[in-house]
Image (cartoon, rainbow, N blue to C red; front, side):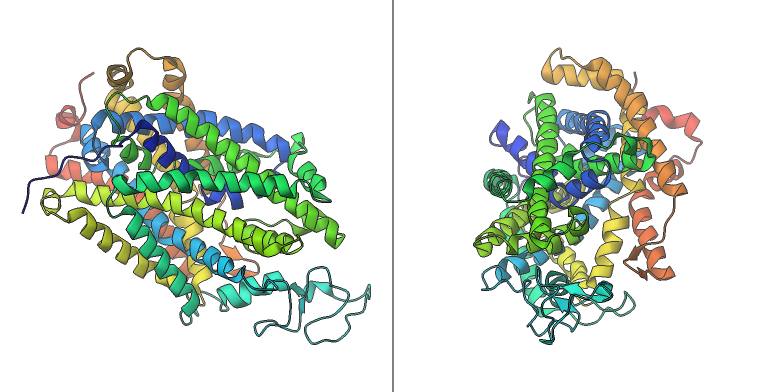
Length: 555
């Protein structure tokens, strides 16, 4: 047993900025934003997205960073200032846990593609492989040969809807090897398990010393993806047909803005990308020096994320425009969303480039680095939460190393369910319920209410002034924190809850128990908010009105 170590601090002010930029600029910028922009009005989508960043994402970032930096503590102890709402912090940690579990599987898929990128030819370009079916067609050879070697005549009456490209079959038959449904979870996939375990080992090595190590690594992992995206953008924008993809990506369709779903998509993307409401920024800012200029960093983070999303869209749709030109089809036919964008459409376009192995390696290295940055923060935040919860844990010499090892092991074991033949179905439950949709907006709303209304916005402003001195923007922050942002979030929550849809992948509709499990995962975080408030009530053994003043700071 030893004395408690002093709380870690960022060695340099830029450590915080690079770590948080690496956190918010993640996979969502590359595989989600470009398609959303394309699907929801092109350049017109930038209007609701920018407004969402200004009135939702940045205000919540400033709220979390200012609160964490002022308290100089993690989630558990910071929320002791508003104990009635301590469940908000606990709920955020549950979403961080869920994010950490499922995020690494995307990196495992990318790692498999990266290894396959060294093959000549690329395995997703041909149909002569063991996993291919008779309906397989090679990119650019739809009217030439199929996998059996029979001539596929250019017959207008031929049912091409039954055909699948080599890239689609590589993804579904070789990478996922997906079963017919979540009811058939199947066996584990040895190669994916290997990549999955190696990634977790790498993550542990990078994070077990806390921010002492990860803050150094992030200078590479946060900047290199941006450099690689720019390199890919410069190259693809010069290709034949690239201008067609960029044109469709950016051409504003203002009529789309009349559709409420476009605004919801923009707000959801901004909230998901910035991690609003999870409390991760609160923890990361608690390692700052007391007088650090978090306002400057919050605005910088918002700009970096928006620019990274915009550049990613340029790079992706320039390559899709090139592919559409090569295949004599439209960008609409080759554009996909989510995993389909980065694991089917983009690899297809890469395969048509000169020296495709090089560009494929660059792309999937970029994807892995984007995910690594976000996972660093997930692990740091959750481990810090566990360590802060127990003084007994902090009393041991190797408490952080051991705690990180245990956390990584537990998350890895749960994540193994997603490297099975039915793993894609488990992944979609996590992706659609655990850390997305209405629950994140509810967390952000209660966080705003707790600090701006209960803790007191004037009290918090005094703390901010103590850290920064006189600062500008109080009217903007007051309006956002108390009225604009929570109102928008509440409206989106109502939209989600009243627009219930069954979860499905293609034509497969998830069974009732799987849908129920998904909703339980959403509730697994947000139930801590009323649950902890009820715990406080039971602990007081009196009505709230009699003793509430002991749980709310005086104005």
